[in-house]
Structure formats: structure tokens, C-alpha cells
Length: 397
Length: 179
Image 1 (cartoon, each protein chain N blue to C red):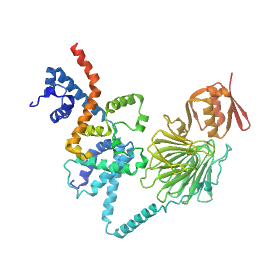
Image 2: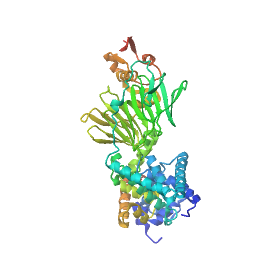
Image 3: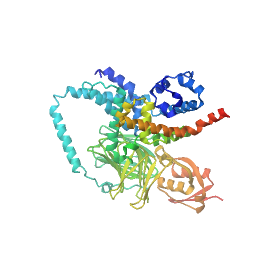
Image 4: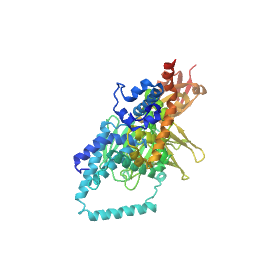
């Protein structure tokens, strides 16, 4: 060794090329020149240990963030098919010359219209919504499409699927299934209180529609953006498309995303509307034009420009409805009852003592409200009375 | 690049995980990272005949992916709360993953986090290149767009930060030996 390593500090060792390459190939026998030096010099031994610990801690850290094999091969398939498309386009290059020119013109045209905001024809959804939410428990989930046609389905849950000009409509158990031809027009799905639906849109976006909701969406997303409108609550897993942002409009808020998972709750009867981000990123535009980005686990609570806040939500219990459950943890009974009342569209009143009961649990939303309340009644010491359409809950003494 | 499809496949197999892991240090958006890897490989394929074989493929891939990612992230900076380049590089996990991980993993994660938390994003980045990717100072200069001296200074500073972190537990066995 030419250098006098005894005076080296850990930092110096970590910047020494000879040391680093020796460490890369080190065996555990502890017989490198540095180990020998360390056995003679305690101060150096300490420095050597510190250097190795830092290296070791750093290596430990790097074992994160791998793609699964499936992800890896999916990505390869994507690259491979892009390469094939590219090869094909090379072959067709001469033939397609005029087409390319046309495409260029199109792109220029598109950009111009984008610049001049020509493409931004906003639709007045509130006036399009012709349907009101029926409050009766016997109301069907109904889809209005192709101008005047409608399909409806009894049952607590429905699944709606668009596929090559047809819409499939079925109940959760597939006990009932309907198929109809659809035109490329705006569709309206009406989900009454106490029911839910699941929709796969034509771009692959998955949408869960909660009870008491009307949602408006086109059969196909043409144009430069994908836009839907909601009154009520939807949870979305948006299929990524960098070139076509996905926009969820409600009466007050516009939520713009590229591809992500989030929930929009915008019931007309609610004081506050909520946007909850589960994954990815979204941007919420407010009526006055202000824009607010959200990061995962953040929830925007919005009433108006002055009454709004963003908070962190550390659990997603309130989104359990997408799996057909009503889930709550350490909540007061009155909050649970309010939630159930909203889902089933029933007025539930309670005596004040109910607010002192704290409960946790999971209720199956496929049951009707009487069954659900009966389960609660078994779990907590409460009694339930029914007066025509109203429900009264009290604490049993 | 030989231009043959087989070599192209090999290139993907050898470097894709590595690139993914690297990309995830700039964003928590795994789809975005995959998109950028897709675009990068497609670009390489398109340019396979004109591309001069780079001296170090690894560095070439890292530089290209970083540029691509930063471009996209800057363009969509309205989707990000921080569009400050310095703030991009991170050793810690994204929020989604922390959300999924169980308690024990999270504890481990926090330990490493606190170990690295003494570093600025740029210091983290330089440490990552030097000790995890084992790149030369010259290559790091290329990746971080800084000169040799600043790269060395950055490493020096990062190491002494890490070291001061490590001082306390490391002294303990030493004291026992002396007594």
C-alpha cells in the first residue's frame, strides 16, 4: 500500500477508488489490507466500520421498487407492439406520404383550435339531466341512452358494459342480462337510493356509482378530452391516456386527471362536497377559476370559495361502498346512522344518547335498511322504531 | 447497437428493472415511469442505425430516462405541488406504497429514512449514483450536469453528513473494548 490509510477517515475511504473496488468483491474472511490495518489500529478500525456500515445501509435501501414479472412482460409487449407499428409505418412511408401531410395539417389544426380555445365548448349538463332520483326503495337502476331509449334493471346492483356499439346491462348475479344497441350520444345512468352500479366506460375507465346518483357520460370519448358529469358520488379508476385528460364535472367542481384512482362526492343535498384522491394526482378547478392539486390520501372538502379545506385521510373506510360495504371505525352511532340514512334515502332520527355510542364494523349494503338496522340492534344496545317512512333510533336502558 | 431485434430484446431484459427502480426515485407514479421506459426504448429502436454506440450504455440509459422523466414532470408540473428540480430525487417510498405496506415494513422504512434524511435531494442523488450504481465521477458529472469539482464536493458533504449520523452508535463498541 502506497498511501498511509491509517490516517483515513470513513469519508476518505468512501472516496477511495481502491477501497471501493475492493469492497465490491470483498469476501467475509476479513483478510483485506484494511482488515489487517484495523486489527493494529483501533481508531482506523472504527473508521473502517463506519465506512462499511454506510455502504451497507445504502445497499439495503436499494432493494425497493421492482416491477413484477407480469408488469415487466406487459411493458415489453407494449414496446414490442410499438416497434412493430413503427416498422409497419416505415414500410408504408412512401404510400402514406399524403396521409402524413394530412395528419400534420390535422395536428396544426388541432393545436390552433387548442390555442384559441375553440374546442372548449362546454356542455350545460345541469340542464341535460332530466331525471330526478326516485326515492322509493322499489325504483329500478335505469340507463337512458341514444336519445330516447331506456333500460332498467331491478335488483340492488347493476353492471354496465360498453362494447362495440352495444351496451350490456346485468345484475350482480347475472341473473338478468340485457343487451341493446347504443348510438354515440350522451348516456344518463340513474342509481336510486339503496342501490349501486358498476360501469366500464369505452376507454377502459372503471366507475363505481353510489346510491342516489345521476351520472352523464358519452358512449365514446371523441375529441381532445374525456368528460363526465355527476350529481351524487362516483369512484373512478381512470385508464391512463396522456393525450386525453379525464374530467369529472359536478355542479361546482371540475376534477381533471390523466390516469388515477379517486372519489368525487357531490350530492346536491350535502353542505360539503368532497374529492378524495387514493392514487396518482388530480387537479380540482373551483368555480372562481382557482385550481388546486391533490396528492394521495388528501381530501378536499368544499362548500364555497371561503369555506373549504384540504385534509389528510389516513383510512379509506368511507370508500368501502365500492365493495358493497358500509364500513366505520370508532365512529359515533349518530354518524353511522346518518351515513346509512343517506345511502338508503331514509330519514333516521335518534335520541341524543345515541351520540355517545362509539362503534366499529362492516355492514353489507345488499341488505335493505331494516335488515341492516336489525344487525346494528343486535350489536349495540339500541332499539329501532318505524313510523311509516321515518325511522327512530333510541338507546335501550 | 447492432440493429438486430434480438439485441434489442436483450437490452430490455438487462436494463428494464434497473431503469424502473431509477425512475421511481423521481416520482411515485409507476405508470408514468413505465410510459417513459416505453418511449425510451422506442426511441432507441428508431435511432438504432444512426445511434453511435455509447461508451457506457448504463449511463446513456440513465441520462435519457432522467431527461425524459423531468420533461414530462415539468410539463405536467401543474399536477405536481413541487416543480422544483432539486426536490425530485428521493430515497423514500411513495405515499401509496406506504399506505399498503404493513407496520413492520413501515418501521424498517422509517429507520432508513431517518438515516438518509440528513441529505438534501441532490446529495441523495449523488450518493445513489456513486455507491449504488457505482458510477465514476465523470459519469455523475454527465448525469447531474455539474463539473468534476462540484461533484466531489457534493459527495464529500453528503458523506460527512452521513458520518455525523453514524457517530453515536459506532462509538459504543469502541468504548466497551477500551474499558
